[in-house]
Length: 414
Image (cartoon, rainbow, N blue to C red; front, side, top):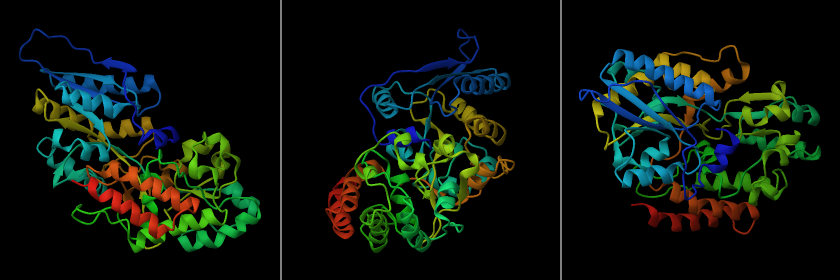
């Protein structure tokens, strides 16, 4: 996701305000046979006009086929979205449909009506396997997916040229071997955003997964990051911190991107930012997209955006009809191209075949993973992140940091 979204992903403020509002045309309020579907969405399509155009046109086409259904939507800002939604649900004033990402699906699981009965069988079978897994909780499909993403390994060709290096890394061993060579040229081999405000989905968890580890055990009853795989992952990045192969300031602060080494071609590779973050600094020609690094497996973080139905929906059938329509192959493809994200469906094929950067990322979509689908996921991050930071600062060993984090995290699992 984009840099701003990454920063705010785990920091939810106290109040919420509606930034934009839009609704489809449609009268007939006096017609008692009319059903109204309400939907809350967020500015996934950054261009306001394009965003409203997509939803207005999609709703207009849907209403033309469903004369007895009116769809109304509101566009909320990213900031404070959990506060406003949780408050609305508690007050019984939530929308019928709402755009949610996987960790929100687990957070609001008790308030969500599963989508299994509302999506056509062919549409459910069309969903990518890893996407289906990312939105399934207790065997139930918790949303209708409309987009997905992946944070592949991104390297700076200018940094490689400056260091006189022509081979790009594929494995952790490759990255470790390159670190001293880049250091000699005043370039960091990678970066790591250590501030607890940054979601671990984009920082530590990809390393944990690549080492063959996991945040929880199989049944979700215990944390599992305090393992040999977890220690290996944390040792990798804390080793880079110790020998000066990552930018020290980023371990404890969160400066704007233009103030970091990444913006001045002083970072060789990263998995924590994407092309949209660095194009203005590197130029498109310098961006090299590669498969995620491998230790035991090659895997990256990605997200999935879905339309979820709340149990309080006034007309579940009508809400389900619209969710299925808006996220079918034709409409999700339009939405994904407009938002610069990727399709969660098999039948849409390659969306970015003519774009070398997007096409390279698109190839990694099937191996991306979302954050943990556990109600305690965010709370566990809250106690694990400071301990990872302590290891990076050298005040704790990786083993002790993970042990302490596990002790603090276990009581959070209910």
